Image (cartoon, rainbow, N blue to C red; front, side, top):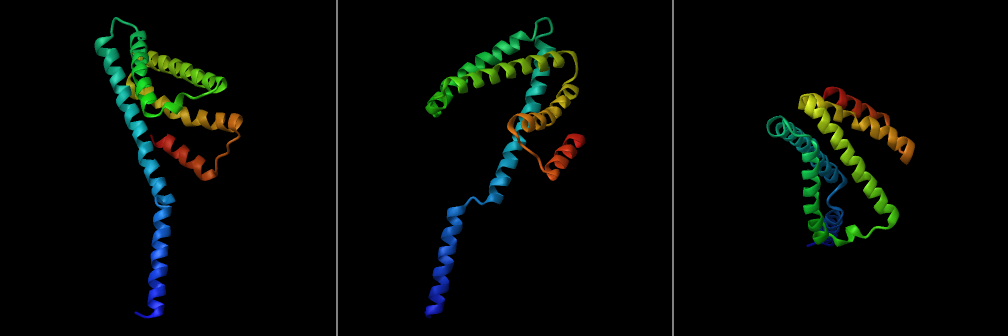
Length: 164
């Protein structure tokens, strides 16, 4: 085997090792988060129809508070599981803990509003208002976090919102 062939093989081996170290590539990461992100609307659609089913079939005479309390109790089941998997998740200071509590309270309030709307109208109509979340997120991100969006991102979000 000649010296040039050996150098070429060595160079190819080094390039392969470097490519392996950089794996997954940026393109692979983009593809994986895209499919993971698609699970969120699918699971929300399943939850929306499940909520409507519960409200229309089993909770006609009762109020939505029972669903909210049941959801809160199920969250209590998740707490020990999360603590078992990642105990450092609860290592927060007072400010971070306050932010988490405020986020939880806002989430519960949003769910209560959503359930009241779902109780009075169809799931397909009520869930279409979830499509306004990116609009509010853009404004809050711009004013609170100082984020900016590129024209392509804005147009993509607009077309996604209008097509759905």
